[in-house]
Image 1 (tube, rainbow, N blue to C red):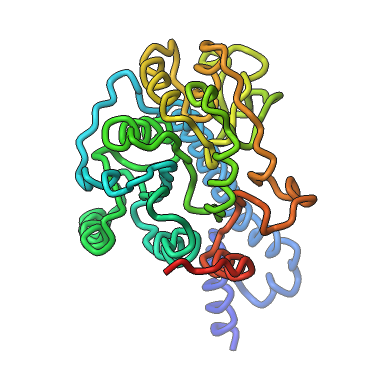
Image 2 (cartoon, rainbow, N blue to C red):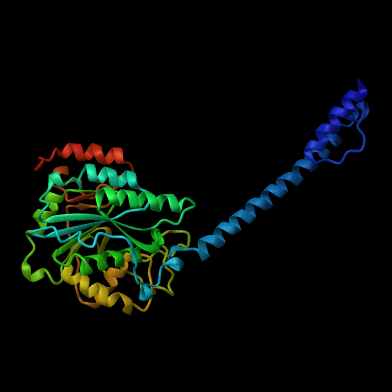
Length: 350
């Protein structure tokens, strides 16, 4: 019995990391506190190792957050040249009365969202197809299954012909590059459309309401028009771990110029041409493409306009009936998008 107890204690001590040469019944019974101290000594060693490991992980995270911050990974727009891996160059030549081109910034692997948009607000039976055209804009997928994703994109394009893909990696830190790609398409292939609406795949866009708004814009304003959800008192974020972080050496001013949220911006094509000319002249680079546009607009002495019916922030359009809104942000799931789209119950023109 004594030997069995000693073996059990020795095994327990070994698991706890203690160095114990011999345990007897007398040491366990007569010196219980000494045994506990030895056990605790083993756990302290393990706890110390755990704390050191957590500290190293924390330091690694901070290092990565600093050296791989979005502003550091922003693509140098001065050397941006595009090769299109997927593009229907005749995509904008089929409208007899072109008015509005909608460019939807999408992730290469989010075919579920593209499918949902085609079935909801992108359904051509709910707007005038002779005046409005849309396309999805994606970069190259860089994940581990990139070959499969890019092959599926090719298949998707062969079915719908509504995707444009350029040959740079997609991602949040390269939104400025995606913006230039969108501007390039608008000028090079779709200049017959006087207006371009830039949006993201997590929006619901009421195209008839958007067209109605465009029809109120005066012809004299076509050369300078840009509008959306307006930020007129926004400051740079200086916290390093924030995705919007911009250090003072990149942008030293305390406030940004006026700019519209990049996820839902309406621009005149004539203005896009001027923006493309000015973009390579910027002395610094930002991963925040909407702020970049605001900096250029300030240089051109053009003020962006606020479009009240474009709803970006939660609660920003509570006073506007849902059916009167132009664009609504924040659809994390396709089910939510379809649910709200069905509420509109728009008449079909097909």
